[in-house]
Length: 327
Length: 249
Image (cartoon, rainbow over all chains, first blue to last red; front, side):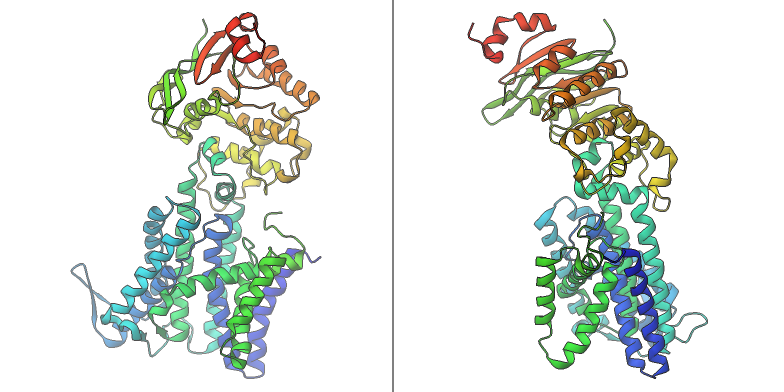
């Protein structure tokens, strides 16, 4: 069987090679596709911290994805219409600067994750899934009825936001930006997983009673994991909105929360590169099969079924011959 | 008499009409092993849960080092010096032996909020963890995954995790359960030494171990302590023989 490290490097190299090849053969759309995979991967890496290490099956991560999206949408909307954003009596200007948008997206999602986590972590199992789903739906319907920012139609942002020193409208430059962010997020995830926090969180998923009897609070560990997880998914939401130059309530939809879980399961739950592999496969299927049939989700479902039944460790588990993520 | 480390006072817990704990007052003093014995369903696990914090008593109190900890959470009691082992091993099965013990050391350090450094490269954690593994004789298995350990080794690991906390008192729920004669003898020898470090409240079914180790024995039947005394006193007690040791007097 193939060592996991090698699988990771191949995926990493592939993600870099495909867009570079696309430049050579002049296929800018391929770059956009890979960028989409990279952004979904960031969102799923975020979810994987809560789901894979903390065991928190959140069916509400679209909340953070959507918040990131709307953070971008609202700030850029005010910038492009030269209107001010009135908040708590303050009159703020919009912005087209990505770093500021990212910061706002991360802070807003972290805050939302903290509040949602405080309320939903009192429950576990299927109740936790339902509460996070309920929060997701609340945000979804709120966005639909929020006519200031387009309601159901969403918001179009005409020009992609800027990053100092780059022309983000050039696909490969925007890809590079997203790719670097994915690397940073993966690196953070790897450090966190092996750090004392990761060790304690990993134990809190398996035996919460043990964690209590050594004097640690499993709830608090999971809450912090949920906040970190939400913040990362929020960042991905801001990037996703910038990729499409469009944000709409579908970013808050429960289908999106579900897709994030699905692509983690396909790649490998709790694996560092699980979400990356899952996201790549998801985007590839969506593109190739989606061109053949409108009902491509059927095939995605079959793959998911096969993996759940025969390869619990996901594709990475299949390749490395190890079922569990922590073996 | 030596210092009082752990005590319950008039502890009561009812489940509906059933008095699972009925006015239980027990003491654990420095340097001793106090064994709690009793037939199945006598309320031993319920008592342990109230002492360790998993269950709130209806009335009565729990004291640790002279402080009332009745309202404290499990983790607060652990931080205050209560080291517990479980009847059914509560270990992170996917993790290595060392990781399980490092978790204990991390709990003792009180600071899990480190997101960057490698836990297994932190010598302040691993030194403590490896010392505990050395003591229970599991140091050779430190890189073994917990799920691959034998039943007996898991019992040893339970004790090792409790050791990393350097507790002021141990509460051990059937540490001998499922051990063979040899393993039981080894653990008995180990606990015999351990009492000098911190007293042990020992819930145990293995009577050979109890009679070999206990300084005092309390007998729990239907939630009540029906007898309390030295090994000799308990062995010769008529009430105990009738209720528990299974002999018709």
